[in-house]
Length: 147
Image 1 (cartoon, one colour):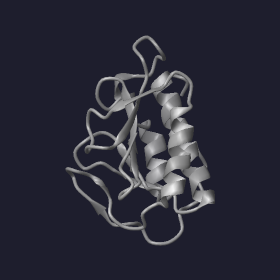
Image 2 (cartoon, rainbow, N blue to C red; image 1 turned 60 degrees about the vertical axis):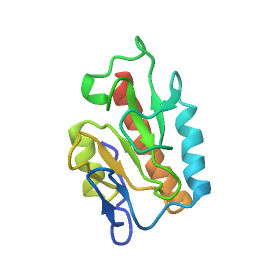
Image 3 (cartoon, helix red, strand yellow; image 1 turned 135 degrees about the vertical axis):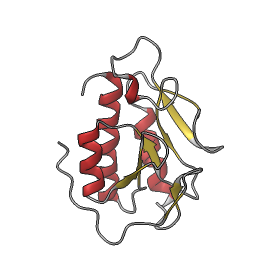
Image 4 (cartoon, one colour; image 1 turned 45 degrees about the vertical axis):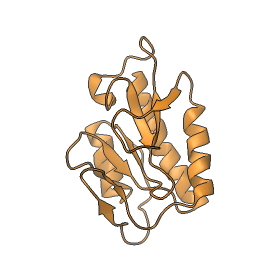
């Protein structure tokens, strides 16, 4: 369990299914970049163009042989998360079903309508950044098998 504080306010507008993203309440670019810096600093991850998202989305992968996460912990190949371009600011990542349910129930994201991933809304404040970072870390643990 993540024990998430409910996200305040109405949910942002979401568009999709292809592409699938956040269309309102866009995260400030500096918060997007802070989140990205944290994500790419996780042990063993490497950055590469996304295999599943829009151009200019930044994706994170785990090398073959690193971690023991199930196939469901990866979107395509070894990609486990990506953050959308600045005009969107949301991210897609994989989560165990019970964790995804908690994220959705607390208002932090939605299930993708066509893929088995979670859209997590971009953080609007420093406090929200900490919550989104907590969700990202759980996704990373799922991909590495530490879940």
